[in-house]
Image (cartoon, rainbow, N blue to C red; front, top):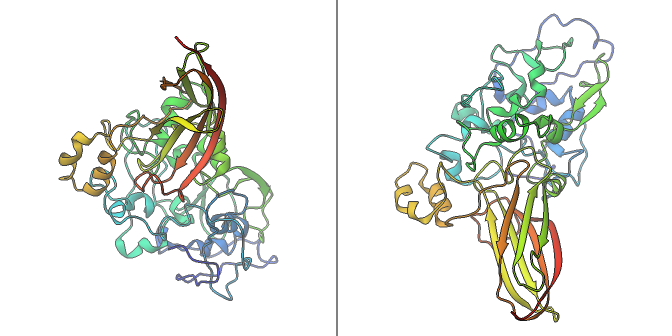
Length: 412
């Protein structure tokens, strides 16, 4: 549950801070992690202060949402501000924020969400594996910690993975794969590539963006921009290019605004027919991506010279719930599924446009009935974090782009 910074951290923190005088010496007794990936991130934050500030407070990000932070207990050793305008990362809240109960139980095909929201240590998968499996979820009793630093950095052997070999109070292993999209693959993909299906982000990147040569960027290049700094401030280690632990995505204005371009054209002079062009110019995956709850609305309104709306149309782009189009004809069938609530919500909305693949230009013709005259066509792209809310509920919606075109219509 989202709370203010004044609230208390529920889990205790093992203080690992070493003084500058002892930071450079060898560590006789390596730190171990008996709690596994349930180890509180505050434990890591005692040494990795800047990274923890990003994780818990969103420093350096642009997440446009109600400012919220991971709270801390008074007197703890991690120096944190009393208040901040930024917002904690989605990873920080993955196990603590409120979420629809049915999504916790079974978001797709009866599989538990726990494998990604509360994963046990895993090995980084082969980036070219044909079918992406899932890591193992933690037991119910250890879910509260959510996605922690250890969720990504703790290996099945109990070591801390990172991009470099370092002298640290815990055992480390250098793994270059942590800087590649393979690191994100387990939790941000499921099964085999099915165009338009939900939970395919890594596979969309690999099959639609990376393999065809649209770009060489890894997930981290966009979602974890780098800076020069020490990984642990009080230890004798060099400054390096270090990823900011922000994972900006669907709540980031920068990520949303750079993803899609849009244009309106009037193919034939003096005729009412227009064409809408929605182009994925900035995302290395489909837009929207991830959960089938995400949607992009293309809202088009035609107004006359007096500013009166005379025609309007809206398209919805979204991932499909399963391996078929979302359509009301599946409604009764899906009520029998173990994930009936989520499936029925998807079906009840009926057919929609598939999400827009990396590099794709989606062309949508429209011929509104217009009398002779001059008109302004305005098109807006709106991102919705949860399309299953009422369309009028705009707290989860962000306008990401708009454009206008003046057209003239004549008789005949």
